[in-house]
Length: 449
Ligand SMILES: N[C@@H](Cc1ccccc1)C(=O)O
Image (tube, rainbow, N blue to C red; front, top):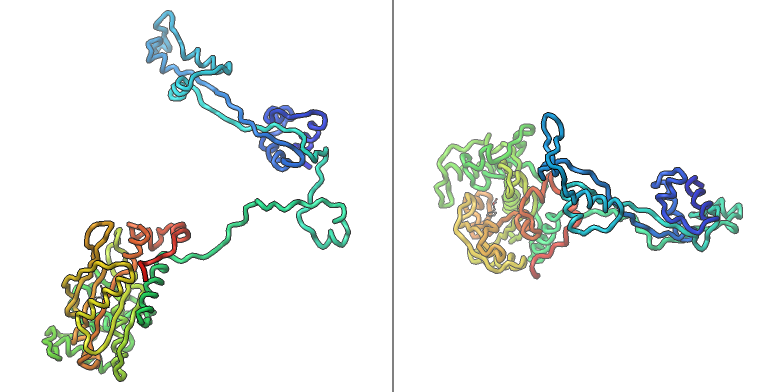
């Protein structure tokens, strides 16, 4: 038992009350904080405790005010008195406070503003004996142990009551990042529409699959190191399908399939260069090539994964982000099919007002940017890109010439930021993300589907 506990219990045996724990602490020569801990642990059965708030004021007197009032002058010679008699109401007020007299709230506010007084509060307790008061506290046992059972002590021991109101330890749990939640919703949409996921596990891709197979000429600005991350180690790809490479080279240089090609000297070294894939369409080109190697069957594919661009980072751009991509490969598809699929895809996101704007991609013709009407912003915003893959891309792969591929792509970050009300992409992804955002954000529900 501590000294403080002894002091309290002993005092209370012969006295009815400890009126003020602050004073008591001083009288027994103990720190109030130490006493406070004991008081808290004895509170309840041993003691009845009431908390008291004691207020008081301390003050300082400012000379600046006296000077301002023209009563004194402070110069080289020290303080010089300038008037014979002053009516010092401030002093009166301060004296009244000192004598614990009542002063108006307005006066208190004034004095506080002038920093003449400071309001201090401290807490103390008044204590009286509780229902189970004893001079020595019986230690209560918290756990029933094997030893206690063996020794038979349990018969005489007092056990601590369960405190059913005690707060429990916070449960540790993992949380999905908002991007993962939104990704799952998009995945559900694709799966409900009968799409199959493409394997997107290659972050490093050869320029060949990322650009050349997509009929993107080798001088295209996107293939510049300002826009694309090239690799220093493992800088080139080990293997490409040679027969198909020849066809791609030919279509770039001199066309075929009704196309004139680009008319430049295609270089194998450029195609061999490894890059961090700049779009998931690199995966689509591989998948379509594989599809073309077998007897034709229609397919609906999707992917949602990371892509990389060597861009300046700002509120809306990161050097790595996620793309959502969908494609349908079938005989006789038209631009009307693309629009229809886009409408039903976006309707499942709760987006029904769509507009299409002609655009350009090296690998699609026609190409369309997708705009949706943003009710909050009251304007049309771009939400994706789409098109029909060019014959210069599909025919060298070996797909039958009546097969068309309609495809579209969008970023995962854009809808996530809109859904979660985040206006800086760096708050969503990267090293500056607040862990609270990840723990506390709500589940994601996209439209009605
Ligand atoms: N790859 C395009 C998106 C796209 C996919 C498929 C067809 C057309 C466009 C992009 O990175 O923006």
